[in-house]
Length: 532
Image (cartoon, rainbow, N blue to C red; front, side):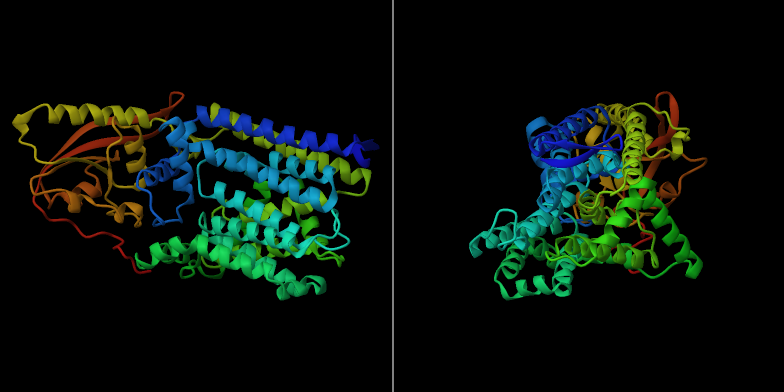
């Protein structure tokens, strides 16, 4: 039996019941997210990763390959549908919650596991990210299991909950930790800060320093290196393009001076408070501070050091470039365990924590409802959710125009291709067009991306080829058309399409037909490989 709190009153709860409730929470929320994932159209980044999954490789321009493998596995089971693309990322989010709960349970018991599952379920950042097919989903899953395996490997000896075990027991947990952190780094490179934090914590704690004399940590490093080796090999054969991009993306030359850096820091902190919800953020900060209180086991110190290591990097990154809101989520996985293993000790604190969970759950509910039907007072063109809507109408217009030209030999068409300027538009078109054809992203104005590593229009087309291009609808002739005027004998403005969500205008696209390519091509605004 163990103590719990309900309505500010202490009560006794059977720990097995608490754990059953934990599993029920995780199962129910995962099932709910699967329903949401099936109903909501794919966002541009998701179709981008779907396009990756059609050409599997050991690496990609932006990230390592894990998200492409997840998407490929889901679409192999359910086809190129929203749920097929999101199936394994959503299941990975459920596995993340389970690993967080198991870690808290190992440190502080079943009630801590239940609280950890509740925190993960209620915070808005989980609601926003646990449905989407992005690299964060596999990364967070494997990080959560890395932490659990590490805690199990470190929590051995006569005073461990399950008593003394032979050295091989810890070795197995170290092997699992190495496998999981290798898979995490094969999902997103920022996962490297987790083993860095674990190593630093072991240096700081007298008991954990002895682990450096055992084979387990070195076995974990070897296994992680073997898992990551194909990713490193791919990058080595592609001029380390992923590393160049990520380092330039997060640690490029500072912009905006001291005032710009201060503004980015405030945006970073404010964004994290909003994504965790203000009250939960307070308990996260409290849990991190208490993690550094001396304890015999040092397990909380490990979690706290991982949090601080990750946050320190992103705080530094914000002095140079803007930090996207989802990047620091890596730090909040161990932080949620700390909240659960250091619950408030007073009834007032319990009420605040319960209120924070309720408030976070309400914010999460608003996010889910807004995804299904717009309820927030946002202009459609500024609503990030609205970017997923309307692409089927654009694809229908492209299909009609393509069929019009292909069915009329009098036009004397050579090769016929479809393209867009941005990778987001190209991937949405590829996903929604009949037959899922390869769509080119020209990238004449925007940054390089994965489409530059695949065969481009100039690699695939012959002189005389035609290009049906989808661009933003602008007043006058678009800059891209002016750039391409030197390369095609004709350019015809075609159908315009309005992207709508529930009847509200999100954006407008315009189709352009470019005929009789002469073999020339204009220079890009950001050459590939780029120089910063």
